[in-house]
Length: 266
Image (cartoon, rainbow, N blue to C red; front, side, top):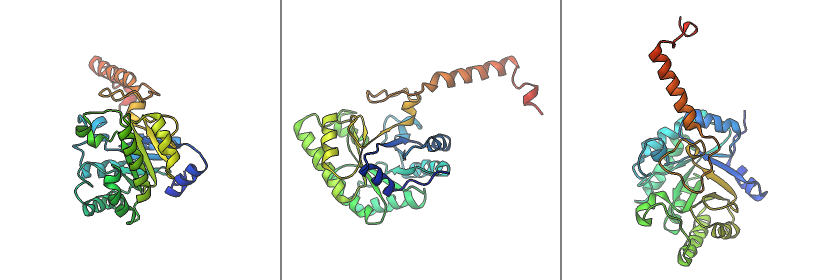
């Protein structure tokens, strides 16, 4: 049985220069496999809305859905630190709602930490949640809950004023008490500057190699998401054709009567 990874372990890895590994999970089977493989942190992302539920974006995802997915992951997990995403409208209205919803993800779902998107604009919210003793991961750059403002999934921080703001955002969330920071869809040089400037680990997704760790959506690395193919994704196993072939053979054998065979019958 793995020893449970804690926030203190992540901080120790960061201080020792060890890269931090993160993947998303939304269900029991995949969470069990990646935990057994030794992943450091599991993110129960609101990306479940896109890769599991088939939504066009993450905005429709609800608190109840996040609690459901987090519970499933927690039943499988033994050693990874599990972070639950706070979905759209669960923290943007006021600090009280944010604290209540963060507490629900810990109390009802069992998460070890929560993640929310935003920089300076949510620093007070991060501070309030941290003051409840709920660890927080911040998330800046390409923030999927802001796609309408950004005009879609666009790289952020290429313009000088954007880069300055992202650096200010990183400093603000670190000062507010976040224990890690996701950097999504920003130039590698900017990610390196942010990583060198703040004293908490940065977790990159489309942010280059200089971050303290990396995160990807598990369905992307397994070739199971056909809706999107971001440049930063590497497919480590193309499972979609294998699954399709298995289903096709099952259909064929049921149709021709060769399944179930005698060995599958009582």
